[in-house]
Amino acid sequence: MAERNRPQTQRDQTVQERVEKVAENSEFTMPEEFNEEDVLQGNSSTATAEPTSLTLDQLNNVGFNDKQDEAEYSKLNPPVGDWLKEDRWACSIRVNNSDIANTDLDSNGRTTLNFMGKPESRQANGIEYQPMLFLRISPDIRYKQDKPTEVDMAYKLFLRAKELYLQLNSEKPKNIGQLVNMLTEDSFVLRTMNGDNGPIVVDIKVKRQAR
Image (cartoon, rainbow, N blue to C red; front, side):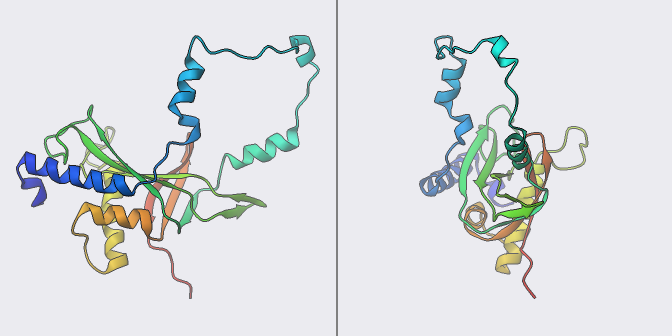
């Protein structure tokens, strides 16, 4: 709370120092399917394609490799539930300048901390899954549009991250940098549910100790 009561210039300077520190240690890379160069080429009017000798009539006689297609399709829908994070994950910091509140850490808009990595693999129905997971938290409070008395998922996960730090370290975090270090370096469990484009992280918690 003391941090949010600082003059705006001091708060902006503090946030910038954290951004620079995390960026120096970040190995965040954009997934290949979102590579900007590829997207621009694909949408460009100057993009060309190699001609084919196949005709539409010939395609009418081409069947499917159902065994291969079904096996690959099943991998697109990993099981929901708990996933264990063990390895180091990448982190990026973003500011949404179209979403601004006077209590935000950055005067330019809402700050989000975005973590990306693969959990330990799991098997289900004889198939091994190891999906890419994305964890997004925000220290800037927002409420759900359809439920204005409930905080949104990014802020909820920020609160859960603070509780996770307390459980792992037996003390409350003193700054956001400690949360970033924990979420990139430490081991914990992420709970997921199905989303339109893959699993969505809805909770984080300590991993259960073996008895």
